[in-house]
Image (cartoon, rainbow, N blue to C red; front, top):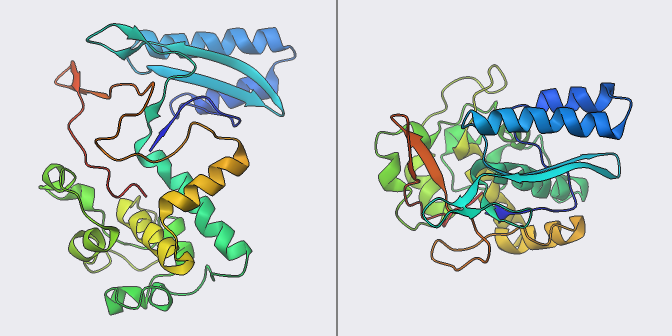
Length: 252
């Protein structure tokens, strides 16, 4: 999934708590802007943030600025209109779609997974609820810990294929007794959404983002040409390099 500036508040995870504290404690907009700018600039100079930041408070945009390069090869700067691959931030949208179904009475958050995906591994499906999946307390194992994860994400696959092959092992602990972040939990939720609604996740997301005014947020295929999309980078052994190829055919 990709996104750029939008109608909602965007906070970089690192430093979000500081920004919230600043917005609550400052008496003037100018003071807020200056302190937010100082924090983001420090993260940028330390090589920990490159992108576009929009901070809102209430109905007002308090701060907005882009940092760094969208493409290191061509030295193209990020702008407020640059789009970015957002990776696991898709989970907030998946959760919103599932919670909307619950709000409409089409899904019971306290029902077990077997009610909606009866083909899923029975002992797990009978033990895990939708609410536990949403809160990362279901104990569902996470495929990212597999030694072959980088090979897995290079291959196109349907949600059902990913779940059956990599997210169907026995649960790791009794549900609701621990918190453990799980990508597989949200892959299951995405598949569940498609099963309950009969529509694709991409279509559901399109309706959700349109209502929120997120006109530049959506899903694209791995080979799609997306205007204004930044190149993705990672840091390995202290050196910045291009991020490895990921198919993104399952983007829940």
